[in-house]
Each structure stands twice: as C-alpha cells, then as structure tokens.
Image 1 (cartoon, rainbow, N blue to C red):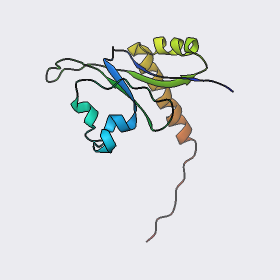
Image 2: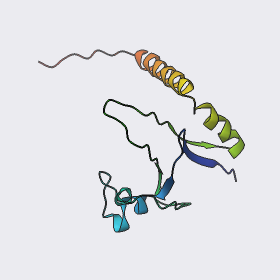
Image 3: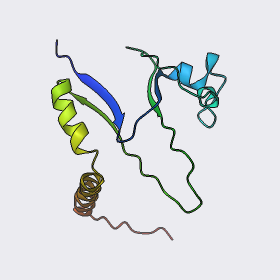
Image 4: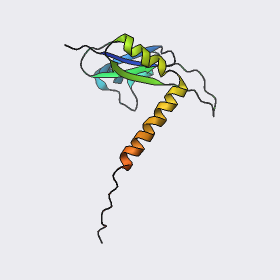
Length: 125
C-alpha cells in the first residue's frame, strides 16, 4: 500500500481549519455554498475527517483592508509521498515571485498546447 500525504496550507497564518464539508456548511447542511453556517462563527471547528465528504478550508484573519488596498494570500493544495517532500514545495511556493513565475509558465503551456490545433467549421445558413 502506497501512503500519501495530503496538505492544504497558505503563506499567511491560518487561525483555524475545516476538513468536513457537512460541518463547514452547517448542521444537516442547512447552510449553503453562498453562506456556509461555519463562517458565521469566529473560528472553524479544526475537525479532521479521514474519509468521506472532505473539504479544505482555512480561516485567515486579515484585518482591515482599506478601500483600494490589497492583501495577497497564496494557498496550496497538494499530495506528496512524504511530509519531507511536501515541505520543499510548500516553502518554495510561499514566495510571490515563484508563484507568479509558475502561473506564467502554466499560462504559456496551455496557450501553446491549445493553439496546436485550430479547427474552422462551416457556418450553417
């Protein structure tokens, strides 16, 4: 059996987390994706579900952001063979320049990949 390490992290400290979708949405799922009941609380439950209806949610208290202001938050969701291997990628992608370069590389890849084949179909009149 091959074991994997799943992780969800961010470059800023999270105050709490949730991995159970039912708890996140609210008891008996009375909440919705537009308004999860757990977000009406000051913190998430920090519950860890091993199998089932999983979710990855982190709560960050970012403070007051003035109109026109910004605050950059980078999250990472992944799976690796070990925590040691995962930690390398986690540390690497906490740097904004590395994230920006990776996103640009991904954008270029998909642009090239999708541009390989162009099809023109006749229009119906």
